[in-house]
Every structure is written in structure tokens, then in C-alpha cells.
Image (cartoon, rainbow, N blue to C red):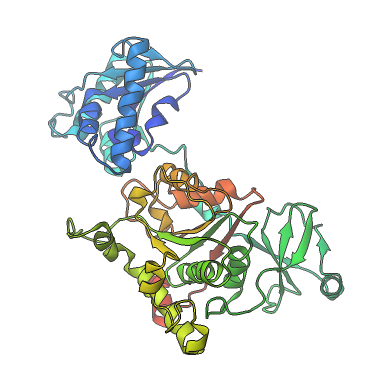
Length: 449
């Protein structure tokens, strides 16, 4: 097999510092311009800053093993080399402005191609515009896709099977059905229907322990903190959310499907009403929609409030709905009135935590909800899930079509990767929600835009 030269763009290394070791026995060339760009972010306290510092540690470790100018051998037999950045050649100088960092990186790849005419040189970048410009000057360009799945085939969490009346009666009488349908993933839901158009099929759940399908155990159309499921997908979601044996639940769906609301309802039920967990921790990535308004004044809580407003809105819906159905005698947690969101926060039942501060923490016996998880990289998702201590449950929700972070897409974000990679684990469950329940108008917007 002919070895290749892979020239890495800055965004590839920032996305995943370990990416430099992912090209097997090939040569990885890192232009000096990339090192200079990375240096601009090393003092940051966010994930980009941490990744930048990790890049420096990796390269410094390689430097101690040999000359980065000549190339340092990796465990897989490849070479990692830091190369001088080059301007584009005379033939392309009129096409590209040579003093921009992107074009210096492209120029370096062109120089390596000219110097090694018999070797395939590939510029690897997560920036589509860089890949387009590289292609325009005759370079092969590729996206960094090590952590990428086929979103069109994303695991939905449920299947429909057509069965006869006898099988349905047998299932209702015996309360179980041996799986003879083929491969089913742990905690996957099964809809037993009479025909394709059957809207009244039985929803059941698969247990990998004995290859058997059972009726739902944890949700039977009861109210969960004042709300009920409105469709089959929400029924499935509640069954996973209320099951203490399922430690990670992922809910994927477009805007208005209720994924955040039902996750919060289940969390409040488990923490406030049933005391199954010590605290409900809610967080979401800090990423603006549209133009950012800059730094916000005040304490950590005051800075975080604008980002958490959607959570506050959902909490108020749940608390106000519950207050209408219960009289003051039932609200004795605080000995006076029906508790408000501020009461729950003050008494420590609920904690709203920026993801920035979650690294390094250990969170035992807590119900954790990570909203808008499609804006997380796979590495950030790993950081969050590894915070889970004993008896902790994590719920990740999001819509992979609404991504606000550059270089992430529906196939490479942390939420999609987690859904696909965890689907065969017995302590994990997933549901994709398609039916909008917010309003008819919201459903139309989600459908046509």
C-alpha cells in the first residue's frame, strides 16, 4: 500500500487533539501556521482552550522522542512532522491571497505535492471553504470523519412488527413474547400491530437478558409531575426515563416534540416526589443563535440565566400545571405554599450548571439532563458522561438538525455519535421523537423550514 501525506488544518486538531495519531502508517504534516493559530487559544478556559493545550503536550512529547522537523515515528509506524508554511505557487498566486492562514496551509500542501509527485497528498480540514479552495487549486481535500455516522440510518429506538391476532392475545395473556423477529437492541421498543395502518398496536420493550419482549413496566399513562404522554414516542420515552436500570437515555427530535419537557418532568418526579436521586442537575452548551451579545455582567448564575431561559420556561409549565391540580395541603415540602422554581433551587433540589464547570466533577446519585446536546463534540460528550457517579442517570436531548457550532454537523456531533455507539449497551436506551406537540404552528415551522 502506498503511503500518503496528510496535511492537517487547525480545526482538525482543535476538534480532536488525538487526530494526529489517527492516520496509521502515513505521514502527518502539520504546518507552522497551524501551531501559530493554536497558540492564540491556549489561555482559554473552554473546551477549545483545553484541546489547544493538549495539542501542545502531544507535540512536545513527540519532540522529546526525536526531531519534529525530520518527523517522529508513531506507534502505528507513521510519521508526524511539523513543516514550514509555504506560500502558494506562482501558478495559483493570482487565485489565492497568500497572507491568510488558510491559504498558507493550502500553499504548504501544494508545496508538499510538488516536492513528492509520486505521493498522494491530502489536505484534511473540517472547514468546507478550505476544502473547496484546495480542490480549486488541484489538491485532494477531505473532511476529518473518524467520528461520523450515517444520520439517515440513525437508530430510532423502536421497531414495528406485524403479528396476527393469536400472537397479540397470547402476549396480552402471558405478558411476554419470545423474540423470533431477529436482531433487536437492548431496551429497544417493539410495536406489535395487526397491519401497517394499525394505530392501536401494543407498545412493548425488548429485554436482552432472556431474548424476550415484555409489556411496559414503568409507564402506564399515569401523570408524571402533572403531565401525561401525548403519543407513542413520549410513552416510550417516559418508560426509559422512569427505569432506574437505564443509566443513559438519549432523546432526539425536532423542535416541539416535547423531549426537554418530558425529561424535566421525569427528573422532577424522581428527585422531588420519589426521592430516588439527591438532585436534578440541568445544563446545556452555551452557544448563541444568531449574533452573540457579548460578555454578560454579574455572577455565574446571572451570566447563565439567558442561556437557561428555555429550561426555566419548561419548568414553569410543569410547576404551574401541577399547582392548578394540587391544593396547598399537598405542597407541604416547604410548609406553606405550592413550591416555586426559586424554592426548588434554593433548597437544592435543582441545580442549573454551565457545562464549562462540569469537568473534573463527580456526580453520584443525581438525575442529569443535558439539553441541546447536538452542540457538543464527541469529546465533550465523553467528558460529560464520564462525570456520572454511582446511581446517576444521564439524559441527553437535542435536535441534530439545529447545530450552532462550526465544524459540527448532523453526523459528527456528540449526540448522534452517542446514540449510534451506545445502542447495543443494556444500560442505555434511546427514542427518536417525530410528532410535534408544542402547537400546530410550531409543527409547521419544523416541517417546512
